[in-house]
Length: 68
Image 1 (cartoon, rainbow, N blue to C red):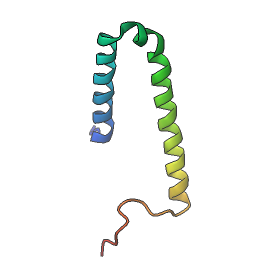
Image 2 (spheres, rainbow, N blue to C red):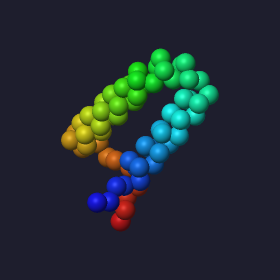
Image 3 (cartoon, rainbow, N blue to C red):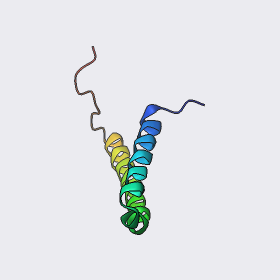
Image 4 (cartoon, rainbow, N blue to C red):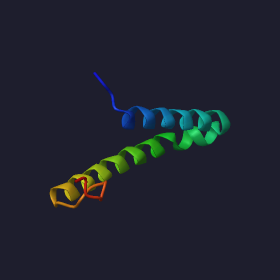
């Protein structure tokens, strides 16, 4: 199964940011990591819904130039 870079790269970057946060600010990490992760997941879901709605409405997607 091939996992596209838009999933694997964002997870790798998120893991690196989480690790640095955990090492440098362990108390803050303990208090806010679950909240921050939940917010990012919720934001991704809302963005997917907006994107799907725009596609269903016929809004042109990137690239905006004509490919012909």
